[in-house]
Image 1 (cartoon, rainbow, N blue to C red):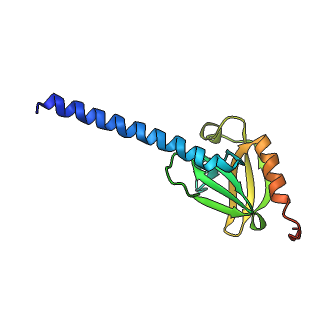
Image 2 (tube, rainbow, N blue to C red; image 1 turned 90 degrees about the horizontal axis):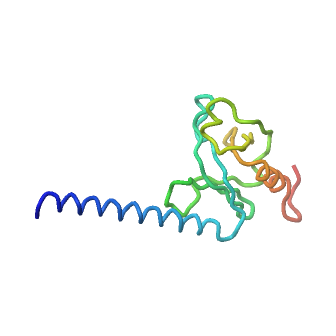
Image 3 (cartoon, rainbow, N blue to C red; image 1 turned 30 degrees about the vertical axis):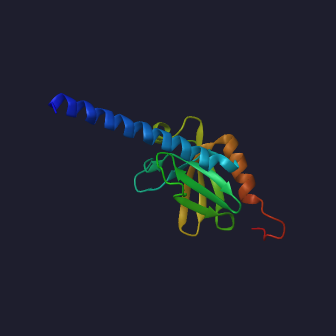
Length: 145
C-alpha cells in the first residue's frame, strides 16, 4: 500500500472519530434534557486564582438535587451534585475581569454555601430566579431554613 493511501485512511479514520464524538455529545445532551429542567450552568471548580477555574456545563434539577454535567464530556453521569437542604444561596454579582471572557454572555456569578465550603455558579438571570425558587422551596413537610 502506498504512503498516500495510509495517509488518506488515517485522515478518514480521524474524521469518522470526530463525527462519532460530535454525535455522542448531541445524544448525551438530549439524554440529559429528557426530563426537562436543564439550563446553562458554569461551575467554578478551582478558586485559587481570581476569575479563573470556570468550567462550562449544564445544570439539571432532579428532585432534591442540582446536578452539574460538563458540557464537553460523553459521561451520562453528573460530575457534581448538591442537595437542596445543604446548598444555601448567598448572593450574586456580575462577572469581573477575565470572567467576562470565560463565561457565557449575560450570565451572573452566584455565590452559595455548601458543607464542603463556598460554591460559585454562573447562570443567566432567568435561571437565577428559578434557582432561587428551587433552593428556597421544598416538598410538603420539609424543614424551612
